[in-house]
Length: 305
Image (cartoon, rainbow, N blue to C red; front, side):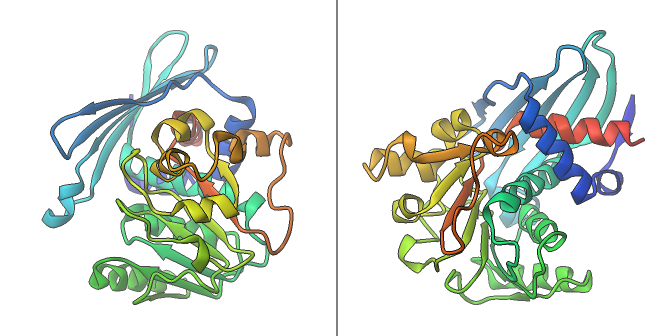
């Protein structure tokens, strides 16, 4: 069985190829039940995310989410991914799950942005300074003609550190003292916020908003007004209606019904729904993560060996 560590995963999962692999998986689908959620204690969570194609591969990701790790200088998420042959069950590869998750998450956001953001988008605001935030900045910079990448975090020193790392790799990045989204073409949020950071009245016309962080019903990065005014697309309806706090809470407040979701990512990839319809339209992509994304990324990494 092959071991694929983080550095090797980065080489094997370049953004264009990874976006294409995810698009193919969203078009054709796979079996991917909702993630299994097991509370370890009041704060920490164990997640199991299986997915399979009967004649191809099976995979399962084991994830530990520990928000308190930030105080220890550790990532909040640790994960491992096991890829096996579906017919025989033979284990093929064990992949470092953190890098896999970061890259497939950012690639899914970039895939959605190619349908929902304006092609000439030049200003990106990233809320958050963790690993996913870094991947989001890199992924969007690989496709859009960005002239500015602003990084905001609750702890300014973390925003400054991430901006410096991105700038060292050639991105036009700087730390921002404000989370104000006005004037930005793309706003990507990857935080553990419990209350909205983004409000509908503050987002400029034509902005594309990418909501990644709120993966529990109790979490929230955007208020109901933002989602209500936007063309709303999700990674999967089942996942977002069960877990996306931004959407679940807005529906509970009566801001809109589930039918307000214009499309899921599979429908966009299959041409069954349209993305952005007007340059002045506000668009929102909400993701909670789909196990099919992990499977697609793991297959790409394995087959590129």
